[in-house]
Length: 309
Image (cartoon, rainbow, N blue to C red; front, side, top):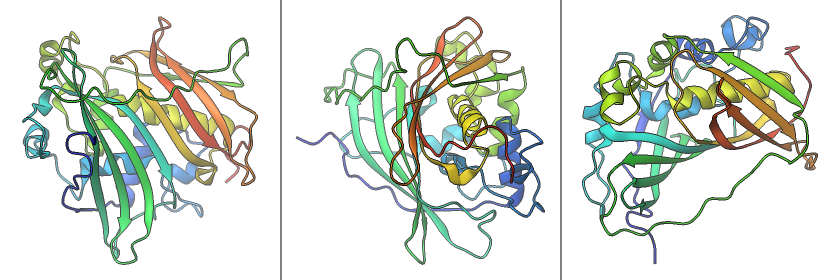
């Protein structure tokens, strides 16, 4: 029996971006000046950071701030109760990069195609919604990226739906020291910069929503931690070359608060495929050792540290 809403396709939506958006994203996730191909539009190898597609479902074609709650309220899935998306947090994300995005969408037509994988009732804790979001060239039909997402709607369970499948885990290897470590220091304004990419959820800008949801105040976007960890892995092991990242995924294990220090431990699994990509596993913790990103896995071409682009 399929899950409620499974296979439901939302209407396709146009997405667009400018070089300025690409530069802002790279700055907001901690890209360094020795990776100038992400930070300078006249660099001969100017590139979009490979995880940028995850922001487009939030941004769409906007160049102005939007009402986040109003947009989320418009979401309806057949066969599923009306849910309050003001109490939504990220569960897990996985991106598969099929083709790099051009530095700007100008002169092209790209669209977001979004379909429901399933909606699962987790009882008193809440409801999980799984979707697959693809960025597609509307005219050629080429798919540039696919993102599998799960969102968690806090306290909105017990409506009689299925519990859903258990997820596959990718724990780091036991008894092995990390092959690389990447450290990011957030500050009180980290989320205010990141939200300018198009994710204007008030939860990340002002303390009131977080207090109502039991977080005690403002928390940083889960996708900030996710994206800055992707950057750390590509920088430490992938030579900062965007072509060296094929897949990236992680589960959002606990909130990150402004001022937290994030340390990512990264392990090579030593199982390189014929195309040169190998599995990398990772875990990201805050300064107290609490895990904030778990189930971390990437497919990467290992090229060493720092970009030579």
